[in-house]
Length: 413
View 1 (tube, rainbow, N blue to C red):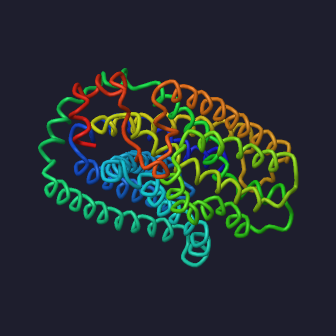
View 2: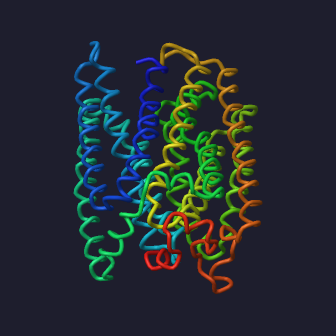
View 3: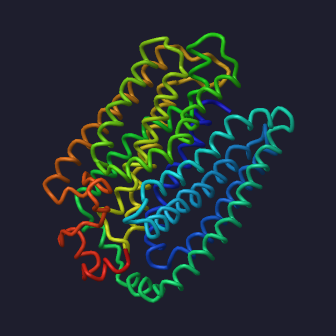
């Protein structure tokens, strides 16, 4: 499989997310979390199964179509499942330890990525690629049963609070046209997230190959471990960063800071021979702060009733950006064989492209802070230090068009 085809597997996952998650978010708002968690976790199992099946057709014309189909199905389920997860997390932790809750879900997500970097290569050497892929399918099956458990707990909790009927009534008010009324701060948050992730995910996808091509003395396994340090750092720091942001607030300030501090990462990779582990750990730290400050900010600027739609649209735009970035990176690297050493100047161009995305992230995050300050400053309010927990925006122009009754929106938040 050529590097271009390899990047296409990432790209189709991103493009599928971009197309599916918008409707998925709307369906979750209309039909509820329990519907979404069952359907989308099932799609991840189906997609991983088809992808693993494709490995049995190596050397035939069916290999790439089957694997692309598997990635398409997996992307349809996995991206949408993340929306359900974020929606449920926002509902149960809004006004409390919201950043910590998002940080913990990110930590467990990154744990899977870390285990992938550390174990997959060894597992594949011992059992072969086919059994490795079927092992991934088995993990998706475990995730399916975990999703059913979470759905049950959510149902029990709703009944105990007596909120089933309230949520059902609010879901009837959700319409596609509500997207037009999402506030400016939401769109700036989405663009900030997109530009930041454009620099992280495409880099991690090719980091192992980059390390072997530019630096001397690294085996494939060592290079994979160093690339995985991005997720290692995130795994270790996510909970602590979430606690810090819940305590301090200042989400908008953190968004700007983590974007600015990411600039040196790609500069070091592009123009120096500083050991790559420094850069990957550094990127993991800024990634942890970005995830804990940006994503939990969305529930603060949009109402709960349309949160699924808002999260779906944000994920869609993010994945469009990542998909485009993967295609651009594939064109920059240019080689037709994964075994051919890619010239350092091509890797340098790739890092400059990452730098450009980071600069765009800085610009949008600065504008976000300016707009937030002119509104109610919800993103940069001090929280527990001042004794005032984060709450949804009180500006009627931000919430009323979506729910019709601002007071009622507070009862479901």
